[in-house]
Length: 171
Image (tube, rainbow, N blue to C red; front, side, top):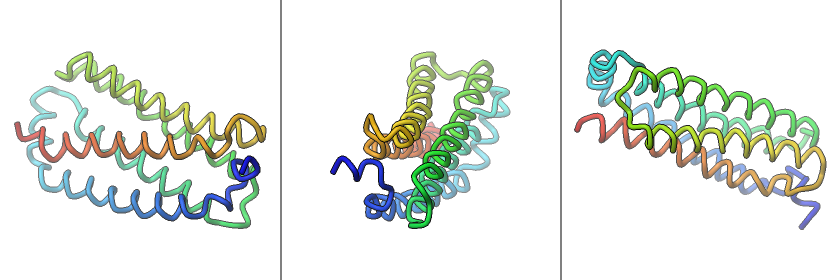
């Protein structure tokens, strides 16, 4: 199975499952935001920060990256180096969220512990995509075996943000 770690075609089933889950969870984010849109905007106006809409954007980006990686992974004509480049591009795209979080945090009422956990998870996600890309390209160090970890992190980030947007915003 060592060769499978560096061959995206052998990960077909994971990509199908991840694409479906990411698409479904993206819908959940839209529902959560649409149900509580007035409350979200009111809270953001009150604290003078876009931290809640930022969470929605962070969730959508995390899930759409999982969807994009999965769809590219399902294309049998994509070579290993091209797939590694896609993963590196996705790592860079995921890095936007921690930068945005830092600026939104400064003007929000979020507790430092919650902020540090959230920032750590998103930075870990960036690292997971980058490591997957590097080890896939090098054909050593795990390759695509890092990808389920990245996908789990992305879903965890999105699900926790969905909870905040759907439930916690009303407390």
